[in-house]
Image (cartoon, helix red, strand yellow):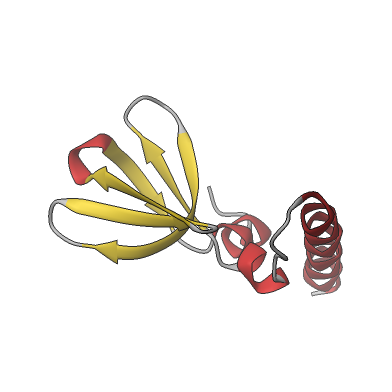
Length: 93
């Protein structure tokens, strides 16, 4: 239990440091919550795209990253991972 709490605190600290860095390097402020629940998709060419899945149907997936929206055909997507920071903190692969 102590290790879990220590890991959680370290994760929150790292997220805060990352948020501070990103806020300083962007024109649009980044909310810490955005870091905590981003999604990731792995494409068939091996590239990973992160953002928020805002629309998903049988044929397409739309990912929002900042003010931009990207549409990907489902046949190009190998994997969709939701809430990637908490997945990382839990140690899932």
